[in-house]
Image (tube, rainbow, N blue to C red; front, side, top):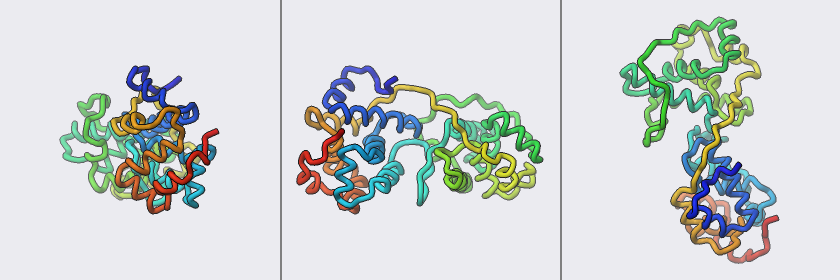
Length: 293
């Protein structure tokens, strides 16, 4: 099922793409969904494109002796979404991880706190664990008392970025959660990783909960991942992507998508490509030498 809306304006723009480029846009929508983005941005398209070794745009990047994987990772870090940016890898939150973020903010507000702190993150993440994870941790000695608050279930997200309500300590706990998820080779940061991150930065939590990072990891073993699938929803191109598509020629391929970004992408995107020697001049010289499959 496509994630792109059946909207005449969107369909007109998509109609300008050659089949492989349109398929790339469809896959970019899936990528944006996994990042919990509200719309599809050019960065989602470029990340998807550069992770496809068969795409003409990627082969042009290779022709410049640039590394598509490095570019894709850096562009993902610029993308709209709910994630933690790290030096080595940027990871999104899992479905239950995002629920825990939303719940931690809602519970902090209900408790009258000005910011979300690691204890809020811990308790919200605990509420979002799967039953077998809770059972394993309680068997390992966890003593969790969940406060009863007048707190509604998380609804539609605020316009403000979700993580702007988190204290510095809470942000450090999420960074620690990302490192753990990365070490375990997980695709996303789940509630179990968020528990460990909160324990790592807030020592009193270890005393009050009966858990340590090591005890948590031993108890969960290989059950730390959250593999909940995101709910399917339609994602429309954002204003920047609509502008990109509107300016492309008919039957545009992935090389044309890349070329537009080299000329008209955000300053950060253009600078990133410039550092990797992927230039407008290279794009113009290449002509049609790097077609899509």
